[in-house]
Length: 82
Image 1: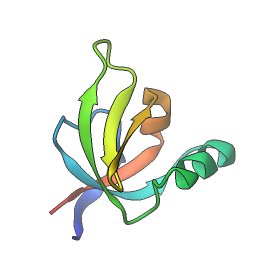
Image 2 (image 1 turned 90 degrees about the vertical axis):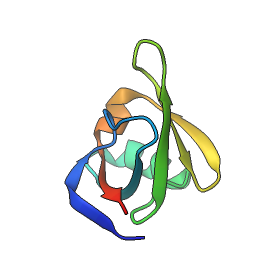
Image 3 (image 1 turned 60 degrees about the horizontal axis):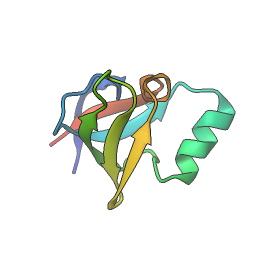
């Protein structure tokens, strides 16, 4: 699948939205940890849900569910997937 639109933060994407990871604006340690968990550039993921107070959020990536803090998700840049 190809991505469209300019990169925007993963945080705030609507539930059910399919997005493609396009980059990071995170400190090196946090970025490496997310890469180790499978959030690599070009991978498609889907926003599953948000906690009642909005933090954390859950995404489905590579066949598993991953919870991310809003601060981390703000630094993950995504584009809408076709």
